[in-house]
Length: 198
Length: 198
Image (cartoon, rainbow over all chains, first blue to last red; front, side):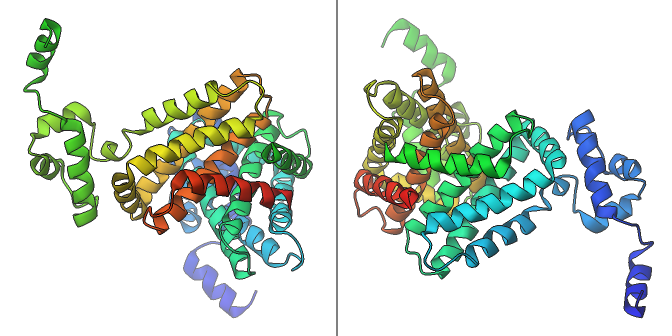
């Protein structure tokens, strides 16, 4: 450990291996067992074997435990759009980005399913989730525009992608994550194409 | 006035001609002039020449003034879907419903533009608007299912329709309502079809 790192950890308190991951897992378990409203930060910290102070080092409140991954998800979507071949149709670029997001959810299947079951039961969390999805669409549309895609095509492609993600994710959840989510996403894009063709 | 109506109005207080419309107009003016947060119910009632008691006969709070039309809009969308020809593709039925909604906004152009300018400035109102749009998509998808459209096609068609409404509405607002909204909606559906075809 470097001197800087030692100073950092002295200042921040005792170092705990994978504290953030343990807090997320403990919180999801408690939200599923007792309900989101009924769970306190003290209980989450206790279940994770950590202190409340450690919790607040990572999360502003118990709601943020459910949304802390949104930044990384947006980075993944935007960078996938940014790295798509120039010659590709915008909807194909968006499809690659949504598939990449689907692979991440598939890898973290259990946590993604627990999280969804908590959000489904709470209208305030649902509103927050819709806002997050709208931000993801706006971020992808912005990256498409930067690549020279004109409006309204940039927004239409991005919004279509988020609609596909919502619907594919929902059928994945209804199926308890048994199907392959990237595959469901590809099928749903094909169905959207067929549906809009009329 | 019938005896029942007289009793009703005695119980509810003095009858005011078009009180609801006057309150909506006064509220929108004040929200635009002073901002949503800075406006009180007392000020809205005063501007409309009515009492606070009359305000609360129509609206639970000042936020509801912006969303009271959501029920009528949902009825319009769902009934248009319900009355579409049986032989029609689901996306065509959804298109008719979204066009019908566009006609209503076009007729009430000034109020629709004022309302949008207020919502754009307030994150909490934006969240509420996204939730309302999600409910409208869910209601149309439900009506399509009732007509025998299978999932995920029902939800895909309904979500695509709401995405078109959002995007067409936004460009109508950016253009200060100068263009014809139903026409913009038709063009945006055609662009969605072209975009998803890739």
